[in-house]
Amino acid sequence: MASQISQDTIIRIEGVSKKFGRLQAVDNVSMEIKRGEFFALVGPSGCGKTTLLRLLAGFETPDAGRILIEGRDMTGVTANHRPVNMLFQSYAIFPHMNVETNVSYGLKIARRPRDEIMARTEEALGLVKLSGYEKSHPDELSGGQRQRVALARALVMRPAVLLLDEPLSALDAKLREAMQLEMVHLQKTVGITFLIVTHDQSEALSMAGRIAVMHQGSVRQIAPPGELYEAPNCRFVADFIGKINLFEGTARPADQPGRVRVHTEKLGILELQGDAEGSVTLAVRPEKIIISHEPGGLEGQISLHGTVMDIAYFGGHSKLFIDIGAGQPLMAEITNSNRNGGPRVAPGDRVRCGWRAVDTLLLTE
Ligand SMILES: Nc1ncnc2c1ncn2[C@@H]1O[C@H](COP(=O)(O)OP(=O)(O)O)[C@@H](O)[C@H]1O
Ligand SMILES: [Mg+2]
Image (cartoon, rainbow, N blue to C red):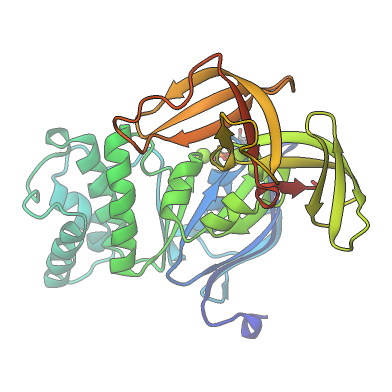
């Protein structure tokens, strides 16, 4: 089997399942992670992300399937003998040890020579920008700095894969965003494969090269961020990643091959590119919606009449909720690109709203 694995695969998960009592926490998961990737695992709370990381780290044993790391079957390999290091959600650093002692701890346990310990500890502290904090104690550090100590402690061991379970969840929004960028730079610098778990889809989109979306123990889609966002393969992924408008419909093949006619209660009949028959969901992202005050402003597009109900202002952009007589309002996003332009729309305005047919997603699952 090992000979079939391509050179650049570092983790291979083959049909792995894990039950806790009657609860199927991880359900027949298969995926491959490449060497040097920044890979994210996302999904709602309780979908099995932490359990999958713990299976990789060797803290749990699969009921079925197997895990290969660097081509080696991990069945029966204990946690401390795996080429991975896990950074826990509640990043544990020893409160009674200073920064340097915390970071060098693993190397001391591994009985590395003194010179090497010092050099690698310095290097790791440099990487996380904590040079000069060697003698500081954890209680003198900010939350963000303690997080860096935990990161340095993991990096100093030079694992092939670093498993990070919600590493930034304890930080406030601004610090979190800064750390997201830093982690991306850090990962590029050290070249270690990062497998990060987060319940925050926007965090995954901004950091990862590829993302796996999990739901109830199963992987629903694995793709780069742009593809997940613009071409989700099912309703769950479309709805979990970003914001989206969803409409139910029934599809039948159109006269032209490769096209379908979708009958919807809310939007009428639409003809779209695609291949589907039976019940489908149409989806469109809020930023794809075009708003026009002019009656003829949306020629040749999917076009509806609506009344602006609410406007939520976010500084750089605003979200509009438009009553299109469909039960649920249409969400639209407009960019506030002109400082003195004044509001383009106000609550109560009658508008035409629409989108280009090619911006409609046709979901069959
Ligand atoms: N040791 C355990 N014993 C029993 N149930 C568990 C255990 N660990 C996790 N679970 C359950 O398994 C499911 C998946 O948990 P987890 O992997 O922690 O999800 P996530 O990290 O995505 O929030 C949850 O329903 C959780 O309650
Ligand atoms: Mg978790």
